[in-house]
Length: 377
Image (cartoon, rainbow, N blue to C red; front, side, top):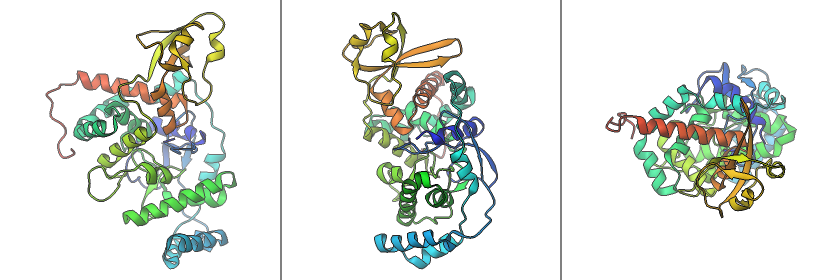
C-alpha cells in the first residue's frame, strides 16, 4: 500500500469509480490518484483530491531520449535484458505531462467527516458484501494462512479500486517512465520502480505496454507499486502466476500477505472510541505515523478513557478526527498502525477499518444460507 501526494487524487477518483484489473480506454478518469508513500506507494485513494487525466500519446517516443538509452543499457547489463527488445518497447511509449501536473498539484486535505463519506457509503458496502460472497473460500484461506480477517482485505480492495472497478487508466510503463525521467523530485524512486516493473513483466510473461494503473504506477486490485509486488505479491491459487489484475484470488492473498509481513496481530483490536477530559490529553494526540507506545493505563491517568473493554497494558495511541459535530477521539492499537503501512494516512486507516466493520456487519446480516456467487471460488 502505502508520501501522501497520491492521496489527493485518490479521493476524487475513488469517489466516482472503483478499481479493476486492466483499465479502460484512455480518457478522462475519475480515479483516485495519490503520491507514493514510502512502502506501499499509492494504494490509490486517500486524503485529498485531484483528478488526473490520461492524455493522448503525442510527442517523441521515450526511446529517442538519451536518459532512456542509458537506462536501457543498464537494464541489459544488470539484468540481461535484450536491448533491442527494450528499444522496441520504449519506442511505443510516450511521457504523459498530465502525470507531472497531478503530482505537482498540492493536495487539499479533507476533514475526516468528508473523507469518510467518500469511502463508507451504501454502494461500497454492498460491493464489499458481494465481493466477500464471491470469494468467501479464498478470504477464509487467507485468514487461516496470514491471520488477516476478510473484512480488512475486502475493505482495502474496496477503498483502493472499488473491488476492481477502477484500477487506473494510465499505461504503467508510461506512468513510471514519466516520473522516472521527468520528475526530479522522486526520480530515483520511480526509476527503481520502473526497473522493478520490467522485471515483473518479464517474470510473468506480460507485455510491458499492456498493463494499466494509477498515475503513479500503482497496479491491480490492491494498487501495489512494483516494489511491493516483488516483495509481497503471491500466487495464491497455484497457477504459476502472480496476477493482481484479473485474478482476485492472487490479489486477496497478496493483500493479506502484505499485512502479515507488516506485523498484523491476529485477534487484536484496531481502534476503540475514547473520551477525554482535563488539560493533559491534548499533548498525547498522535500526529505522526508511529507505532503506539503508551499503555492504555498510562493514557487513562492523563484523562483518556476507552469507551469499551480493553486491557490496561495494551499499547495504544490517541487519535483525533474532525467529525461533523466536533472532534472525535479514538484509541488506536498496533493493527491500526499496520494499516497505515499500506497507505501512510490516519484518515485512510480509519476509513479502511470502518468500511471493513460496515461490510462485516452487513455480511453477518445477509442470509447465511445464500450460496456463494457461482464461477469464482
